[in-house]
Length: 273
Picture (cartoon, rainbow, N blue to C red):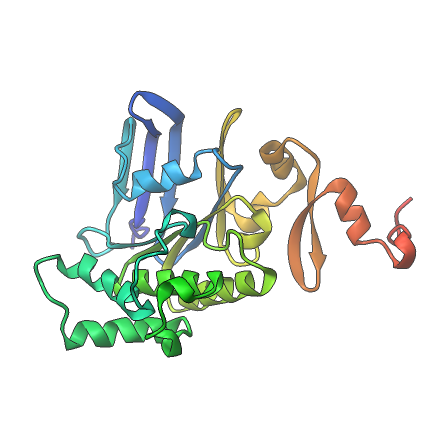
């Protein structure tokens, strides 16, 4: 049997806006069920890459294709950045989630009992069933993010695509969102997650994509291969290595990594000179 057809493929693609390319020569294949983290500095091209895949931007060259393994168009559940959302509108959390069903079924069809059931199931999936009747604007940032994830899940997507979903969150909120995504991944969901913070995604993602348009960098590979010091130095332009803190890997500048591993009183780690 041959290798399965990727659900996402970029072939010698050029991305950018109108006649202003950001990155060219992009080759990337993503298999169904993968958790892929797209990492790079702010303004480096991450969101442009995702918007091109979603069809919101046309590639300036090459091929960008998303197709189900069995054939047919891919359905994306897109979770936008909370900062780009008007949080003033007077909708309940449930009504925001049900908007995902509208995106699936079209504006001319009124939601029915099945749509209500699917919307409530999506809320339960991310642990916010009890918030259904709460005004969206009154929720905490972490709760709002879960509502937006539930809205994307109500669409019954093939791929869940998230743009900086933990931006502006505290440690507890970030951990809760990443735990939800890890659970969805275990259930077979294909996840594409954009973040400018490597530590947010490298403990969860199967593979990483590093992207930066100036100076140009586009590199993809298994997470273990991508967090080597030489690769991280290329991405960040400074000496970076990965340390383990409390059972989780974090990316630190070399001077910070030494401090993190130091003993009481700032002593140097054992075995260093």
